[in-house]
Length: 149
Image (cartoon, one colour):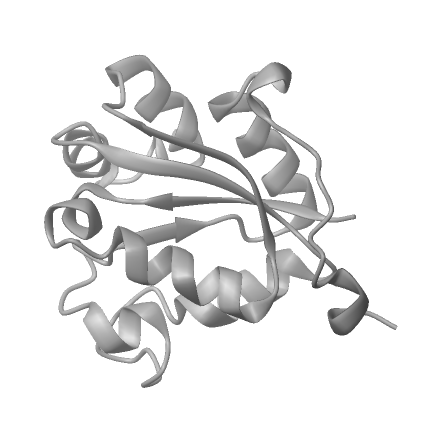
């Protein structure tokens, strides 16, 4: 079963969107297998955004993600990486479709509410960065038989 990493950023937490975002993934039929609220350290933020280290916006990303609590999550399900990205919407909320998290709640690219892994391999890397194995659980929802053939 595929897993992905999602993080509700400080703006999403401050705006009280945690429950709404979790509801969307539960309603879609995905299984939450890891969840924690935390303040991100400078070191973790820099590791998470390492791919952007040489870009002009790197410092701002790190400052923002460490500015307040985030909610880190691991979700499980068939096709969860691609489906989660669809639910998130385009990076720029102004071009994100209505019905997506960013399309419904975002206003600017710098405050776009949520992060989601962009590929299966990225998800594996991000999950390992943010969660210890013992912080994740495996369980089967009683809805599984109604979701999958």
